[in-house]
Amino acid sequence: MVNTAAQLPDWLRRLYPFEPKRFTTPAGAMSYLDEGPRSDEAVVMVHGNPTWSFFYRDVVLGLRGQMRCIVPDHLGCGLSEKPQHWDYTLPNHIANLRALLESLQLRRIHLVVHDWGGPIGLGSVLPQPQKLGRVVILNTAAFADTVVPWRIRLCRAPLLGELIVRGGNGFAWPATWMAVSNPMSSDVKRGFLFPYDSWANRIATHRFVVDIPSGRGTPSDEALARIEQALPALRERSVLILWGEDDFCFNRHYFERWSQLLPNAQKHLLPGVGHYLIEDAGRFAVDAVRRHLENVG
Image (tube, rainbow, N blue to C red; front, side):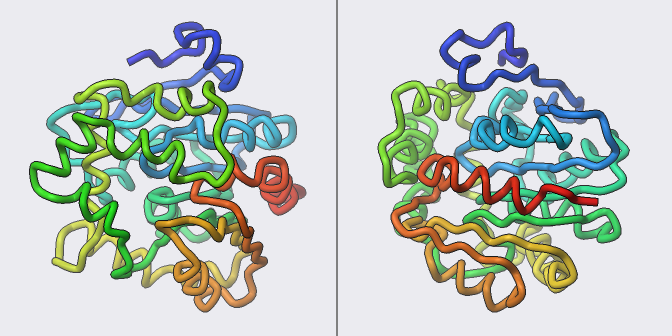
């Protein structure tokens, strides 16, 4: 898979004007952005499924003039390699991100997390709470819950789910209109779908859905339980909860759970904004994240 800006099509480079770097894991190379001033303090933005670092492009453009921005593509996602025989589970994604962050020797980490990026990002940093700075929570969960929309449950079905997600692109493609309230431009839509253009390249898209914790005692269930137990540490941090109210998946139920867990967090519930809230809320979302993270130390 292409992994440098020079190899990306011109239309994508205009939206994603970055030069990705590579980090080698035992299972394959991860692509990641490292933008902004060199520092041992950085904002780490962690994406979910079926997105990639492209999701954070406008946040990076808004922050990189003053802060170091680290934005990985999970293995199997974005411009990272997509091994076909790797165990795509939450503990392994956490291990990859933790290894990347350790290689960068960061003293302080400010987190922005969305969707699967919540448990992966928090699971990577919470074991070292002394490194954790400010946190931005965007339509995600990092705790066990039973609210799973039927459309996602369908994509988990044995055999049929894989045919839908990997064969028909029936997860990433519908998200380009189901995850927003305002239609995307054709190039933005192409940008979200660019890495997921074949059965092989959609492997993580499907495996993430299969790996949604379901209380059956899997390694991912156990990892999520450990993350949930550590979440009270966030009460000692400056946290912004920025939430698209029209998210069909991470709906208001999840916003209320975060609000109960973190009663002192700054909160914005955005009506008319879907799961891809940075697309729908645009400059408001970018500015809210930037204001929360500026003057960190």
